[in-house]
Image (cartoon, rainbow, N blue to C red):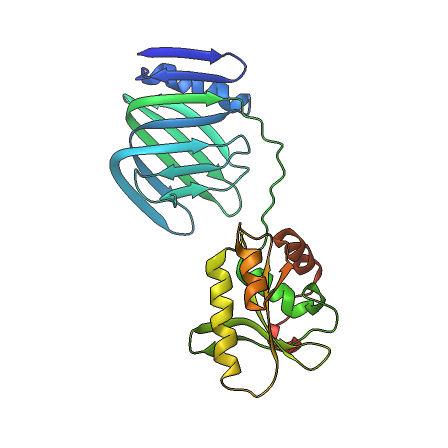
Length: 262
């Protein structure tokens, strides 16, 4: 057995601990609302709205300070068993095994994790006050433009989206205030020469089908080196489109189908 205290206030690590020592450490951690990582060979029994049994194997069990419990196998990102926040937890030894039990009151569900061997036990006082920000994907940015066409320019009116042309699909196809057709190519990240050439191909394809002026606008947070010069050379335009701004607009908008705005 090895015990390593990196900081008594922050993290305690036990390597190959005796099961009784582990039970005491887990119990202390639960009382102190610490985050626990338990790695070892275990079996898992679930009783609740259904029932299941997971035969012995090497697994990782995470117990979070809010009472959440996750049982992970060595592969895959989804837990094989789990309990939501607010569970009642206990740890003890029985017949030479370490038992960790998580009970959810409503609906009544119980997970019993039985370890016959532990490789690693970590008790951590983790602090996370960071704000989570998820900005828009390209699909979200497209939706924001359709709901708020003035993100491109005042007077812009979308006609359709994902319009099929020979080189691919046009993100947003519309008309400006002067009646000219407008093709908008949206990029979530830095738009480079490839994006410019892609837009130029769309313009060429549409011009071959219509007898009118067609504008091309590359909408992205920023341009890569050389992209601005290529846009000017090809007679195309750039509009700065911020994913964060798009995400904010979508949050404020009521949930409606894109087709309602076309």
